[in-house]
Image (tube, rainbow over all chains, first blue to last red; front, side, top):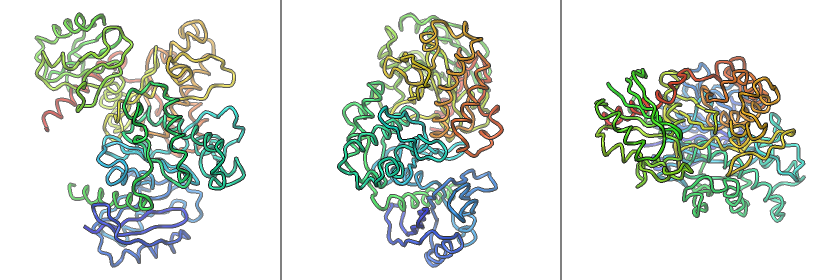
Amino acid sequence: MILGAIEAGGTKFVCGIGNEDGEVLERISIPTTTPEETMRLVVDYFKEKKVDALGVGSFGPVDLDVSSPTYGYITSTPKKHWNQYDLVGELKNHFHVPIGFDTDVNAAALGESLWGAAKSLDSCLYMTVGTGIGVGAVSEGKLVHGMLHPEMGHILVRRHGDDHFAGSCPFHGDCLEGMASGSAIEARWGKKGIELASDSSVWELEAYYLAQALVNYILVLSPKRIVIGGGVMKQEHVYPLVRKWVIQLLNGYIQHKNVEGHIDTYIVPPALGDNAGLCGALALARQAYAIKKTS
Amino acid sequence: MILGAIEAGGTKFVCGIGNEDGEVLERISIPTTTPEETMRLVVDYFKEKKVDALGVGSFGPVDLDVSSPTYGYITSTPKKHWNQYDLVGELKNHFHVPIGFDTDVNAAALGESLWGAAKSLDSCLYMTVGTGIGVGAVSEGKLVHGMLHPEMGHILVRRHGDDHFAGSCPFHGDCLEGMASGSAIEARWGKKGIELASDSSVWELEAYYLAQALVNYILVLSPKRIVIGGGVMKQEHVYPLVRKWVIQLLNGYIQHKNVEGHIDTYIVPPALGDNAGLCGALALARQAYAIKKTS
């Protein structure tokens, strides 16, 4: 089976070809400029590939409600030119194959659950901590959606007593993303995270906020594994701090080996590395193909 | 089809007979004393009923992992005599029919999604605010479980600046349940909620905490409807306050008609009234019967 994958990001579209085992056979990167320009290059790339299905993991917000007239659109993004853009519609104009479409983080969650750090589990959470914070989840074997897709990066956290940073989220100020994203770190400390690597107070605070979010995700979704990636998590010393705070904040309430004794294998880095996004899109393509076959 | 339903609570077991349309045909109430005494009366009640399936919505925590040796147990409850009690096992000793088993709140969520306030939706959240706070959820048409069942009543909330109450949760102090349950209200104000009905500051604070939790549930699960019941919510004037705070805290981030303009039909009371628990157990029985048939 030949599957096409598109990791549609705000700065670049990574396109690739892979198979149903999550193997990426080739990939290219296309800058995100205008939809016309970017999508022309995307279409050109896939034109001769004879894919059996396409998968798109996209920056958002996106409309995932198949009964909606704007299904497949990137909706109210502040990203210039892409507001209300019919991404799936444009692909359908050129490719008459099943097209899977979801958020980039839901795609990555599915990819990690099929081939990565949460392999063979029917439940996991994938969080990326970069410029922003995005989270996707698989629950009971399915990607979580409802009224809309999750927007877990914006959950409310408790301010640390010593932290007087106002928060960088334009909507909520001091929500999780406003306090703990890469942008928030830079705005609070006046330097990028990578330049602050040796400052333990930076990462203790970072872990405190991330752990609060994880505690709430654990209490709401009870994921069987939590995968955290993204640029900020390249600081690998943050993982043990996050785990420590999760245990402390749960305070013995969740009686499960994942939390009691095995948290090192419960809260983990992604296993798909730099291919996480593209593998996620492959996973969406595989899912779309399977659904089409049974329908 | 004759379905048996058990609403297993900490003070009473309500047992009943109903059908696959959620109609409760008869019911009895049995005090929760020791497992031996209570379960003998439960078994006696169902003995002559010739049920096709049984459903149990139970107080918790419970073990819902079918691959676990303690599946069907009430696990680490502080409730005397019931710690590590094999509830489903005891029923299996007497009834050779499919048995559905879940938390009381997951049962109620399923019941409301089949026959109640979230009818015909494949996604909803059910919250009960009583002595404690319990929450169940249906997502993508299925009850949410993972590592364990959700424990959303304990998510972390932000303390209101004017509130100096330490919180009543033995695990977390000022988590949601510690700040907003019926017990918390009584501990903070020195009176039961019902005696404080006319004190608007009590309910403004209550709504502030409940709304924070709902905002986080919305961001994580994106439920298509939110049903809130329980003793505390008999104060019907709390609903509009909760809705107001949800809109305020989301601050325009979730662009959906449910939040923008239609919140009165998004955050609602249960439709099954006093039968919510029993209907939930009926729903579990119906589900167990259907699964058995197709397996």
